Amino acid sequence: MAGFGEDWLNDGLDVAGFDAGLWVSGVDYIAGWREAREAADRLNRALLGVGFELSAVRAVASTDGDGRGVVRLVGWPGAVDRLAGLLEECAHGDGGAE
Image 1 (spheres, rainbow, N blue to C red):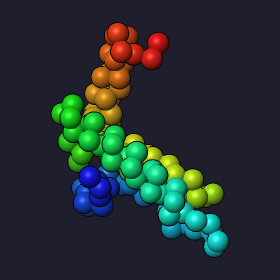
Image 2: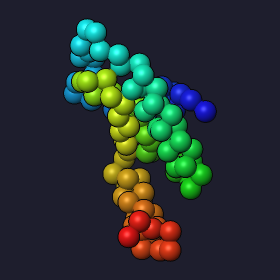
Image 3: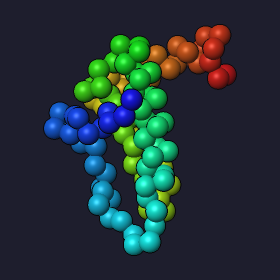
Protein backbone atom coordinates (compact mmCIF):
# COMPACT_ATOMS: atom_id res chain seq x y z
CA MET A 1 0.00 0.00 0.00
CA ALA A 2 1.61 3.25 -1.04
CA GLY A 3 0.70 6.84 -1.63
CA PHE A 4 -1.04 7.88 1.57
CA GLY A 5 0.50 11.36 1.59
CA GLU A 6 -0.34 12.56 -1.92
CA ASP A 7 -4.07 11.95 -2.03
CA TRP A 8 -4.88 14.40 0.72
CA LEU A 9 -2.67 17.36 -0.15
CA ASN A 10 -5.67 19.67 -0.21
CA ASP A 11 -7.47 18.45 2.91
CA GLY A 12 -6.21 21.25 5.15
CA LEU A 13 -3.31 19.38 6.77
CA ASP A 14 -0.15 21.15 5.62
CA VAL A 15 2.36 18.36 5.10
CA ALA A 16 5.16 20.55 3.71
CA GLY A 17 7.76 21.58 6.24
CA PHE A 18 9.50 24.94 6.26
CA ASP A 19 12.43 23.42 4.37
CA ALA A 20 10.35 21.69 1.69
CA GLY A 21 11.97 22.05 -1.69
CA LEU A 22 15.47 22.83 -0.42
CA TRP A 23 17.54 20.00 -1.83
CA VAL A 24 21.32 19.78 -1.94
CA SER A 25 22.93 18.75 -5.21
CA GLY A 26 24.59 15.34 -4.98
CA VAL A 27 22.58 14.04 -2.02
CA ASP A 28 20.57 10.84 -2.69
CA TYR A 29 17.19 11.67 -1.19
CA ILE A 30 15.32 8.85 -2.93
CA ALA A 31 16.70 5.96 -0.85
CA GLY A 32 15.88 7.70 2.43
CA TRP A 33 12.45 8.70 1.18
CA ARG A 34 11.65 5.14 0.10
CA GLU A 35 12.55 3.81 3.55
CA ALA A 36 10.46 6.52 5.18
CA ARG A 37 7.58 5.80 2.78
CA GLU A 38 7.47 2.14 3.81
CA ALA A 39 7.41 3.06 7.50
CA ALA A 40 4.79 5.78 6.94
CA ASP A 41 2.58 3.38 4.98
CA ARG A 42 2.82 0.80 7.78
CA LEU A 43 1.88 3.41 10.38
CA ASN A 44 -1.00 4.65 8.22
CA ARG A 45 -2.36 1.11 7.88
CA ALA A 46 -2.17 0.77 11.69
CA LEU A 47 -3.96 4.11 12.14
CA LEU A 48 -6.71 2.96 9.80
CA GLY A 49 -6.90 -0.35 11.64
CA VAL A 50 -7.72 1.36 14.93
CA GLY A 51 -10.33 3.67 13.44
CA PHE A 52 -8.51 6.86 12.52
CA GLU A 53 -9.29 8.76 9.34
CA LEU A 54 -6.16 9.66 7.40
CA SER A 55 -7.70 13.05 6.68
CA ALA A 56 -7.42 13.74 10.44
CA VAL A 57 -4.02 12.22 11.28
CA ARG A 58 -1.44 10.45 9.15
CA ALA A 59 2.23 9.66 8.69
CA VAL A 60 4.05 11.40 5.85
CA ALA A 61 7.36 10.32 4.33
CA SER A 62 10.08 12.92 3.97
CA THR A 63 13.86 13.30 4.16
CA ASP A 64 16.19 15.50 6.14
CA GLY A 65 18.93 17.67 4.66
CA ASP A 66 21.35 14.74 4.58
CA GLY A 67 18.95 12.49 2.66
CA ARG A 68 17.97 10.32 5.64
CA GLY A 69 14.38 9.18 5.74
CA VAL A 70 12.05 10.96 8.14
CA VAL A 71 8.46 10.11 9.00
CA ARG A 72 6.37 13.03 10.16
CA LEU A 73 3.06 12.70 11.94
CA VAL A 74 0.60 15.37 10.86
CA GLY A 75 -2.89 15.81 12.16
CA TRP A 76 -5.56 17.88 13.74
CA PRO A 77 -5.00 18.42 17.48
CA GLY A 78 -8.07 16.40 18.48
CA ALA A 79 -7.00 13.37 16.46
CA VAL A 80 -3.42 13.57 17.74
CA ASP A 81 -4.70 13.85 21.30
CA ARG A 82 -6.84 10.74 20.73
CA LEU A 83 -3.78 8.90 19.35
CA ALA A 84 -1.71 9.96 22.37
CA GLY A 85 -4.41 8.56 24.66
CA LEU A 86 -4.40 5.27 22.78
CA LEU A 87 -0.62 5.02 23.03
CA GLU A 88 -0.72 5.85 26.75
CA GLU A 89 -3.24 3.05 27.28
CA CYS A 90 -0.96 0.63 25.42
CA ALA A 91 2.08 1.75 27.43
CA HIS A 92 0.32 1.08 30.71
CA GLY A 93 -1.13 -2.25 29.61
CA ASP A 94 0.51 -5.64 29.19
CA GLY A 95 1.88 -4.84 25.71
CA GLY A 96 3.45 -1.48 26.55
CA ALA A 97 7.07 -0.46 26.43
CA GLU A 98 7.32 0.32 30.14
